Amino acid sequence: MKTEKPEFFSLRPEIEKAYGYSHAVKISNSIKVSGAVSMDDEGAPTAVGDFFQQMKNCYSDLDKVLKHFGCTFDDVVVENVFTTDMSAFLEHAAYRNSIYTQHFPTGSWLEVKGLALPEFLIEIELEAHKEN
Image 1: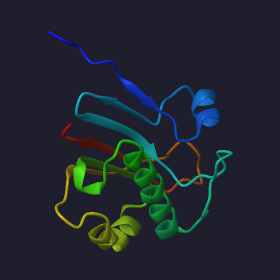
Image 2: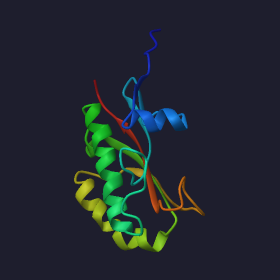
Image 3: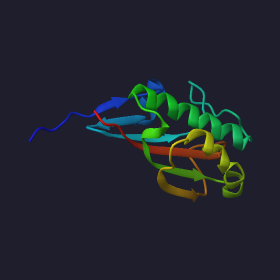
């Protein structure tokens, strides 16, 4: 039985190294993507106080990760959303219709007490499946 070596991907290598994580890992046809937050390339929060822009920034980063592996949001099978403000997420949830145009993934929407930095209002993690 052949085992496949994991392929790791860093979107912001210096930040990921400092905090000890990889933004994504692909094993076989499965891609696990760490939670994306609204940050710049130095790790500073962006769109502070603007929930909708933070949400769009998360999807922009996730799109970059998916493209690295030759995927699109059509390949996403699980999406988990963590937010400190569920009412704001629900207000803007319809934006996801422009992200997921073929189908919606499974997943959970969770309101949490806090994220990695207090300025982060939303974090989105994904799992994708890509046929070879």
